[in-house]
Image 1 (cartoon, helix red, strand yellow):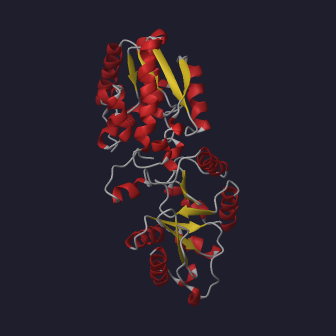
Image 2 (cartoon, one colour; image 1 turned 30 degrees about the vertical axis):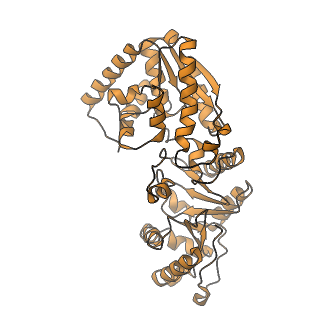
Image 3 (cartoon, helix red, strand yellow; image 1 turned 135 degrees about the vertical axis):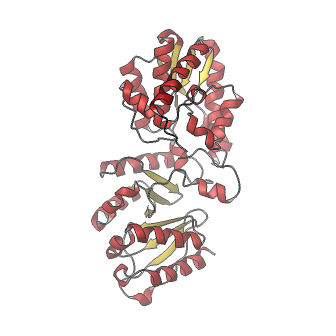
Length: 92
Length: 287
């Protein structure tokens, strides 16, 4: 369930975000998979933290059934190849 | 919702507070070291004097050391009679389970102890720092207070948060601009058991953030293996530096978190209550 939501959100975000954000993988974290964790590369931070983008990402995450949207601070996301976009398993 | 009074309304409410406190006779204040309880203890001392005022701080793993230090420092600096009281909520499985009534069980322990001790120590009334803005929120802790006859003089006088900050500033209290500081347990996602280890992870995580330049309202929300950082939305621009992000992430993982994430919306009061609200249950104290 969490993995399906994560996959759907990842595809949605990839369509919305411009290429400068690079690929985005989404994983569900938390006891109930309530946190949408965006696993991205370091180049995506400046895009994702723009006020308009962060609001939109949070809204899309909520629409996908998550309560929170957050960026993984390891910044070891997938390389800049849009084909690598996929949803991940949650740690719930 | 916080209401800002006009100067005249604020002064009138301040006078009412004096009347409420005077009518109490003597007062034992549940004193956390936060903005509201510091102001209440200060006012009680002003109106009732040191022989009829006592501020009591609960000693618990869920109280941040920083908050406790503020309580002690302010009491000393302003001559407020002060005691500590070890509380035992960690022995209550209903509290440890961290359900939506966690705050009720915690406050029941504290207020129950204070209500028992007050007459033995010679005080007629026990009061908390709830203010007029708190009326609009449903708070299980407030229910625990009512059940034990705890008074809320700031609320009774009609003083809201902004009034209390303004009056605290005028009185020279160092807490006038302190951010809200609910207990550490409020950072744990509902259903994640409250343990001393998790509470320390949260406290230390927030200390790391302050050491790295974050200030104002910030939270480390504990979602089990994941730490979700909330900072002032106006500060999110400082998080575009990948090296800084990785460094902070590493420091929090060293505290025992498996994963560290930054919330894209920043600090939201009571964000963990979303889970409870979504389930139709009652929210706990906002955090």
